[in-house]
Length: 327
Ligand code: PBG
Image (cartoon, rainbow, N blue to C red):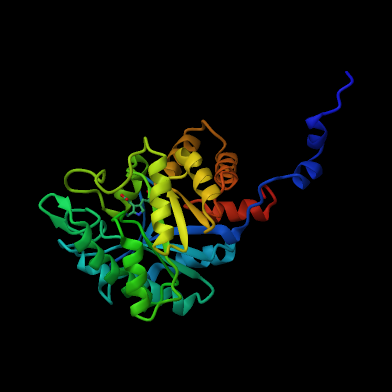
């Protein structure tokens, strides 16, 4: 055949394939979600997330040493308090679990960059992401509480805050509160396009944060919608978000692509607990090659346009990058 174009030419060797890769990945863009729990001497595996643990502050070195030596030096912190109440007061307590964990990590691992999840569902007795008025979450009242949480995280030493509540107007309101408290250099990573997703199931088990009644559909987005994600990200950017996020990741690659094409701010994608649990379960059953699936799915999220990936597989990915398996 007299073919002018033979795309296979560029696939003939590993060296060549690596040279022409369109997507490059780096450890620098990985964030590891970490659960910290009130109490002492705790390092317990999360049953629905094999390989992931909840740590009390004194046990943090168990995971922090591994992360630092793997070159994963960015965290997203989630707290599991001993006490919950209607307004989630442990979330903005100076001696709260996240605040204590931040100080311990900053003292002992100064190279680590700490992002905190700002939300109330792990801290409220009803498990909703805000202050209730009857059975619904009161948007504007919740904003005051979210601001207190964000400011208290920043005061404890958080480098960046990431509101995941999906209230309207929270980014503008939080920016103002942080600035007023003297934290104008603390960036906000907004969970902007956060869908009401069954993929959060294992997380709610990990954090004990399932709502005690109803669901989160009155604040998280309906997964049938695409334009709504553009509207949510537009609003967050206009209110001052420094980074915007799409969550979950794997079933939302179309949204990641559109959001990253549309905006000039960095885009993060959160590959959530259910995505992790599915890969773990299928590989345990011997149905898939775990390592290859972790690599392929992470690269696909970057290929879709994500600049940052929040993933429970951060450490594995860092090792695979080191070994030259991806990137
Ligand atoms: C808090 C929050 C959730 C997740 C991140 N922040 C749970 C939820 O919205 O119910 C999910 C993360 C995961 O599933 O890995 N609102």
